Length: 305
Image 1 (cartoon, one colour):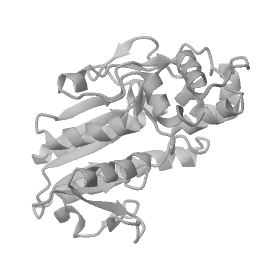
Image 2 (cartoon, rainbow, N blue to C red; image 1 turned 90 degrees about the vertical axis):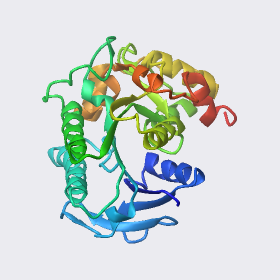
Image 3 (spheres, rainbow, N blue to C red; image 1 turned 30 degrees about the vertical axis):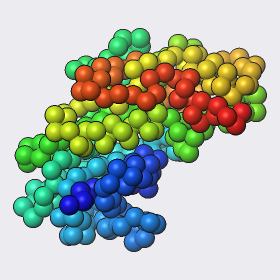
Image 4 (cartoon, rainbow, N blue to C red; image 1 turned 120 degrees about the vertical axis):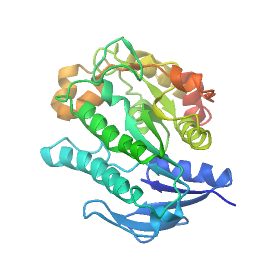
């Protein structure tokens, strides 16, 4: 019998690629969406802000993957935007918990996204899943921590629960990489801040393969960092991207205060240093297709540039 996967956030960067890879692996896939029509995938309606969900959605699924949440990198972090970022994650996850607490389903595993933002600005310290979260005054850490707490409650229902702390997901289709590559194409590539801050990245396909392996293998449970085993500094990242795209680095570094003026509190995304360990996923037997940054970037830009 074909196994069925229900995905929230299934039209986003990770969700859309993950849905395709699951279908290629022989799964049936459906999406939870606010819109009635989500293209070629079956969809069920839900509206976390109103606490409503199609009553047939959860009973459909053997596995549930929770990726829904407003983007942290679009628009300045106004008070309203920060509320949207938090509420879109907590509201959806709490609604899923409510439905999973009902007896009329056969969900075997619940997989939920989080982010390495939970570690805050950790300098050059190598952090792992046992590292304490940053204080709640750090917005991204607070969002990630509360999102994880909401998701891990599903474990109390007797459902195997996995939380993936996502690093910087690399894709030419969205996320951070196109924003970093755009000025590089114009010959205006630039190191951000001191350039010494660590970036813990992961190729989009490896993220999806992580979710699929965690879904399929029952020994996966609890929290995992979804990052490649080779974090790099912003200077190293920028120089590698320039080399792959055959573009020079001609401008001086953009100072941190300039980024803070332009981006406000959101500048934390590019200025915080996060050197994050992938060891726990490796110990589970996961094999990264892209362990090193240069081949990962070449998969997107190597042939065109």
